[in-house]
Image 1: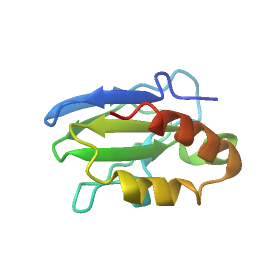
Image 2 (image 1 turned 180 degrees about the horizontal axis):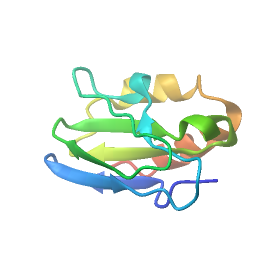
Image 3 (image 1 turned 90 degrees about the vertical axis):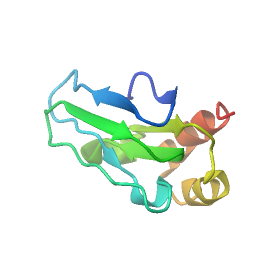
Length: 109
């Protein structure tokens, strides 16, 4: 199970729409992978969620029921100002999620 796409690069002020394609999925912030002071988000299971990202940085997110299966994603909003903090926290994720998030971090510019 995976978000598609798993990595997105956007500008501050842009929105992202999370649309569940199958039942029992959601999208929510990984709080430890969010810029300091940025709003967290949590979508309900089986519900579409639209989130506006105003603060620059990297935002990690997950499907709560499927985190351990590696269902995570990463959004880069403008400059990756919190990259070092995100890299440190990715090391603490479950193995499959850590592997996938590390691949997404390799796409950050």
